[in-house]
Image 1 (cartoon, rainbow, N blue to C red):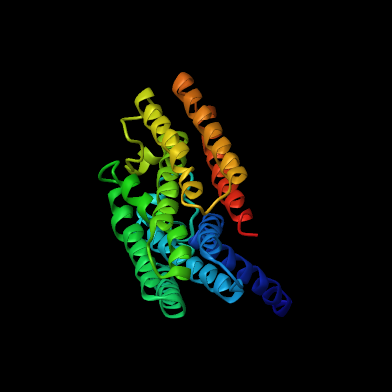
Image 2: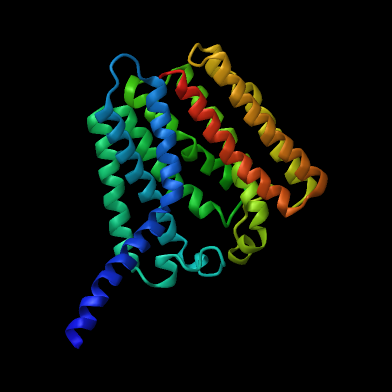
Length: 297
């Protein structure tokens, strides 16, 4: 009887542990970031495609981002427990010890940086390390200090396409910077829409995520400005000869839709409109990246 009970408990325990690690690395967010790195890699590629390189840029990117997210949860564990959205995270809830999460996160970060730096080039490794350090040790503590944290966080958030580009070219040329700028300005629209929806929850932990004191037309105006910037920035790949007219039109339409949603938020200041901006930001990033990649096929 006891043997049977133990036999049943083991797979449940393994499943629960795996689920905790998925939460630690923020699996869905990490996969989105990995896709952005793969996007940069594909955009920079020419001639015979390096499938091994694509696998390794994805693996290295996954490990670096997973490490960043894990360290973020270790540092914020006492604040995560205060918020409804994060109270069930493994470290905050006590299902995973600080030591376990710290060691796992550090090992992932070291492995990811080494994969990117050794297989590809030194620049890729430096960019990966910089991204990890900025996110975990600058952006994370700044969240309770000043809204500028979103600006700081947007830097590592915009680096994945640069990683992919640098992995292939070993340089930071005009197109590399263009990819960075597009994703950099996108970050503000995306994260401010989320911060608008979760404003009350963030306030429980003392996080200063909105650029103004709350859900105001001033905040909506800033979202509009950053959404508007994506229209000219989205033309850069075409102007640099790295994207076609059709794919550029699709990217511009997706940006225009996001801008339309931002204007609606200014008019209503309602959470449902902020949620529409959040959804439209996912649509924009996906459409833009897939559209530009089709030019490489």
